[in-house]
Each structure stands twice: as structure tokens, then as C-alpha cells.
Image 1 (cartoon, one colour):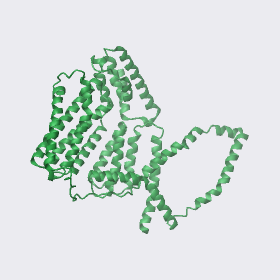
Image 2 (tube, one colour; image 1 turned 60 degrees about the vertical axis):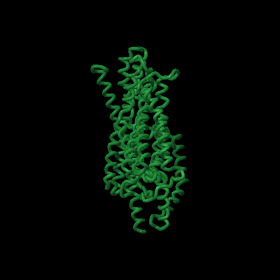
Image 3 (cartoon, one colour; image 1 turned 135 degrees about the vertical axis):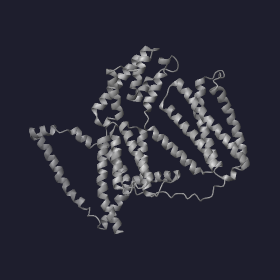
Length: 491
């Protein structure tokens, strides 16, 4: 017990110093400042600190892979800090701490429970450590902190000294001039309650990372018996339901083949755009419900017959075709109404759903369990999101919209300059291209030119005004603008 207390006391000063340094660095980098390259530098500093203070943090191969991915995310944050890489970096840090407490990776359910334990217990670690410090103080393991009470005797002299100083500033012009030259706004900003709240929140999070004392969840052994579903299902009822579902999906797919894939004329009163948009998202919900039904009914081999397996394969194939139709609907809707982040995210999500359905076929054919399917789908989602961290979606969206705008092609929808403004400096090259090619609406081309000029001015001002706002992508964008201005012009 004494050795444990000694280790505790020995580690506390080091981690307090490291935590205070990280909080101070967060204040310098982030408080009341725009997010820039400093996010990546801070992430690298945090990762390095944890590796130094937590012995054996990188001893597992999985931990080493996650660390390499986090280093790449730090580079992505230096290039262009965004919410997605920030979120994945935070999740990766917690994953490292969880692996530090485990012998290896676990199933998706255990990971989720461990994350929840960290959130609910880890963020209260400061309170547990403070209580332990108080207990050790009474056992004489720490110096008596009652010396702090003696500081109360200094309150009256200090207060009187402040009064004397104020009176001297009124009585002596030299002292008054010195006082006037003090930057009181800076002092007021330092003592701001909002700054104090920022420091407090940063300290709580960083202390949870430096002292991850939460208990991991117990991993499931996988030896439990499957839940009895005989009250709700039987082999015959599952086969009949699959026959019914296949017939219903076949009707929907037949309509999509007739009107969507074959481009036949729609019934009177139904526009092609409304047909494309109406089914894009409900069809994804339909495919998800189908996946849940398969997980429940085919998680137990007792309900799998040769007929039901053949029917479920055909049903999954119809679901994949249904997702493909939803993707095609979304493509057509984008062609008419332009590309947005939400529609692009929907395309990625639909692709993940289609991949999950394909993995369901592998699960049934290989006799895998439901947890295998959940784990593989989670890994696929993480890999997809991780890859998205390194893609410049702002540039992709801006380029697509200007090249398919009504002002350029004569068909489709007008270019939404307000949305282009939301995309920020990444839209500048697209706006310059639009400025030279909007032959169907010269007035809109002039508006695009004004917007591009404003974005260029704002970009240059931000990069000059605050060193924290600098990013590799914004610097490259500014240099590209300057090169094009002095070179051959915009394409």
C-alpha cells in the first residue's frame, strides 16, 4: 500500500507539470484564435507527451498502427484543420489508452463500452485524485496543507497595500502616467471568466488523458447460447416472409428499371427530379431495415434452411440493386440541383450500406457470427472516414457546381453564390473559372468576380493577421492565386 502511494505521489508532480504545459499551449494556440496549423502541432505534442508518460503505450502492433494513423492525421490538420480529422484524432487517442489497458483489440461492442467508461469515469479522474491527495495528507504522506490557511493573515495587509497604491496614483502624476501605460485590456483578457472556463475544460480533458484510471469493460467470451426467438420466428415463417419481401422489392426495382435506368417518360404530374429525390433516402432506410432483419433471423443457424438461404441471397441482391438505384437517384438530383456536402455525404453513406449488404452475403456463406459482421462494417466505416480526412471536398464541390451551372451550360440550376461563399477560399479557382465561362449570364460572372476578390482579400488578411491561422492548404491556395495572376491567367 505504501509503495502504491509512493508511486502515486511521484507521478503526480510530473503529470501536473505536463498537464499545465499542455493547457498553457492550448491557450496560446486556440483561445480566441482561428483554427489553423497549430491544431496539428498541438496534436503531435499531445501524442508525444502521452507516449513519454505512459510506459509501454506503443508495445502492441495495433497501437503502433493507430499511432502511425494519428501522425498522418496531425499532418492533415496542419494542411487543413477540419471537424472530421479532429474527431478521429480524439477517438484515436482514447483508443490508444484503451489498448494500453488491454492485451489486444476486442469486438465493437466492447470498444463502445470502453469509450463510454472513459467518457463517464475518465473525465472525473481529477476529483478522484484530489480525494486521494486529501486522504494521503491526513496520513502524513504529504506536507500539511493547513499552511494555506495562514495565507489568510495576509489578506488585510494586501488589501491595504492596494488602497495605498490607488491613492499614490492620484497624488503623483509620474506614478499615474506609469499606471496609464499598463495594458489593462490585456490583464482583463487574462482574468476573463471565459478564459478561466477554457482553462478548466482543457485541464479536465488533459488530466483524463494523463491519468486514465477507468476500468475497461469485460470482454464477451462468445460462449453464450443464442437467444431463443421461437416465439417470433420459425423456419417456415422466415421463408414465407422472404418470399413476400422479395416480391415487394421486385416491384420497386421494376419501377426503377422502367423509369430510372431506362429513362422512360414518367406519369403525368411527376417530374424526374422529384422522382429522383423522393426515393434516395427512404430506400437507404429500407436497406438498413432489411439488414437488421437478416441479422436477427440469420444469427441463429436453427432458422436457416436451404430455401431461406437462397431467398435471402436473392433479397440481399435486390437490396444492393435498391441502393444502387438510390445512388443513381442522388446522382440525377445533383445534376439538376447542384452538389452539396449533405448530398456528397449521402453518396458515401449509400456506398457503405451497399458494402455492408455484400458483407452480409459473406457472413452467411462463411458461417460467421453477427459480431463479425458488425466489426467488419465498423472497420469499413472508420477506413472510409479516415480516407475522407485527406480529400479536399470543398474544392470538389465548388468545381462541380460551376461546371454544371445554368450560367455555363444553359441547363440545370443557377449557381448558388451564397453556398460558394460558405465553401471559403477553396472556391476561388472555381469562381475564377466561372467568371470566364458564364456566357449565359454575364451579370452573374461579375458577381462571382466580386466574391472571388473578397475571398482572396480575406485569405491574405487572415494569413497576415494571425500566425495561428496559417495552413499548408491556404498558403498553397494563395501562392496559386498569385502565380495565376502573373502568369497565363485562369483556365
